[in-house]
Length: 85
Image (cartoon, rainbow, N blue to C red; front, side):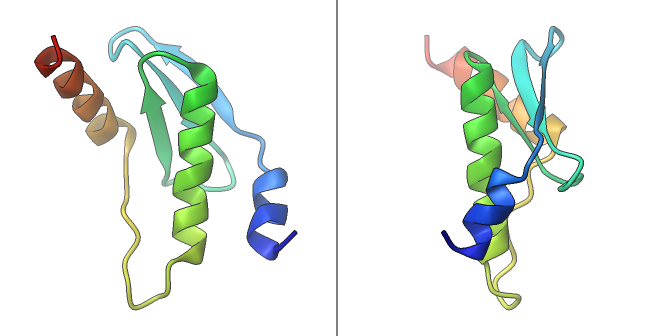
């Protein structure tokens, strides 16, 4: 297990349903600037947050990591849902 995996295992993510966004929002006190939203599953929101944190931790300083705030990710989820059917 490498350092990134150890840090991921020590996360205590918080997941909540947000009716206004119609999505589960995952966040972690350990990484306050990162959130991930999934409209279908709380587990998928946690998985997405872990993936985002893993990417952030493995990115070199010369390459900026993507930043997803609740509002921008929620807008993406809503836009995807409205165009998919």
